[in-house]
Image (tube, rainbow over all chains, first blue to last red; front, side, top):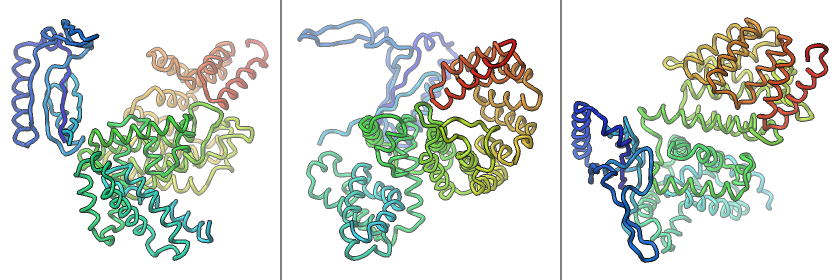
Amino acid sequence: MQYLLLIYANEAEMAGRTPAAIASMTAEYTEFTKGIIQAGQFKAGDRLKPTSSATTVRIRNGQVSTTDGPFAETREQLGGYYLIEAKNLDEATGVAARIPGAKIGSIEVRPIWPPAA
Amino acid sequence: MTACAPAVEEVFRRESGRVLATLIRLLGDFDLAEEARQEAFTAAVEQWAAAGVPANPRAWLISTGRNRAIDRIRRDAVFRTKVQGREAASAEADADAAPDEWDDAAFGDDRLRLIFTCCHPALSSEAQIALTMRAVCGLATQAVARAFLVSEETMAQRLVRAKKKIRDAGIPYETPEPPLLNQRLQGVLAVVYGVFTEGYAATSGTRLVDAELCGEAIRLGKLLDELLPKNPAVLGLLALMLLHDARRAARESGAGDVILLEDQDRTLWDREKIAQGLALVDQALSVPGGLSAYAVQAAIAALHVRARKKEDTDWPQIVGLYEVLLRLQPSPVIELNHAVAVSMVDGAARALDLLDSLRARGQVGEYHLFHAARGRLLQQLGRLGEAGEAYRAALRLATLEPERRLLASRIASIGEAPAGA
């Protein structure tokens, strides 16, 4: 099965980190990503720019509306993701628990629908 | 119904959980396995009436259920589009397995798989308990609904959602490997104890005790002990449930009123359950490695039941065990129980200090038993006005009718007291 691991964290806290803390977390992410590539679990993964750069698009009554910011105001914001292959939820949550961001934010584990037959 | 119906019913009752557990593994789907079991049981009623109960009824039920399900998979195009080819292919591959490969060890593994799947932490705790009672204990949806004071429809929806989550999220049908096993076992034990406490002290309504739920929880505990032998937490929980359940007949008066431990007729306690429980406590405490909080709670319950008269209770040792428990698993409820035990050793004034310190930390204000215990201590100290206030606070928060009657009688007893009330 494929799972999307959504990495949430408090952006304000993330922005306030020292350069040393940022460097050390970047190193942890590099190592983690290498690990899941070697294990054959990695499908994709990216870091997102902050929600201050986000734009939300909706169509209402046939009109496209484009607004500043993310869809919902929450304490933690989506900051990145991994798409992985895992044999079941236990393997997926095991990978999620090793994401460096799990120590400061939280990881939402979402199974992906298989492509329609 | 035919002459062999009682024997058939007995087989169904005994084998229902095992048959389902193995069918889920063979078919890879909860709903399909439940339908297959139902079809197998229907076929058994027809065929066993004529031919008698087969030598190995379990293998007969599993192989019949599996074959019916595979027939269904083969002819049911809707099913094929629903689950794609994977489960169907694996079910067909498993169908070729010879029945003699289903030895008792494999059945045991299947039941453990089923328990760990039903108690998976990715399910809500309500769903875990409901699914365990339905799938592992084999209770009818209606019975599970009654236990949780919800409508059958609500419970049926809850079960459907839980099974959908298992399928959609890819919750494995597996017993976790050792590094994860102990952590996940804690969740399983919490579910079993949840079933027991739901039966032992229903949280609302008119019943005080639901013997059927207590019995199911103990059966689950025994099953876990059989499947995971010599595990201190399993032994401890089983001992704890047996020692509590042994006092069941003495806990409730004929009129359905609460009888507190100190006032119970100890001759009504179930000596056989006590003997089983005491032996299990000793085993739980003698397993090397980690002390389990359940085992310590069982040891406390053991000290209570060992006393033939309430005056014989070894309160200093109970206080000591609560202190061990507070280090293992700190919680306001345990602090409350510790304080009550302290009152029996060092007096009500010392215990009241502990309760006031507990309250100052702001965790127990809404807990009716805190106010009830505080009222009791104040009453013992002769501070009857404050005791009445505490009992009234408890009464406002209590939801279970028998407990409310007990509190009302306490308030009345203060009212009748002379000066100072």
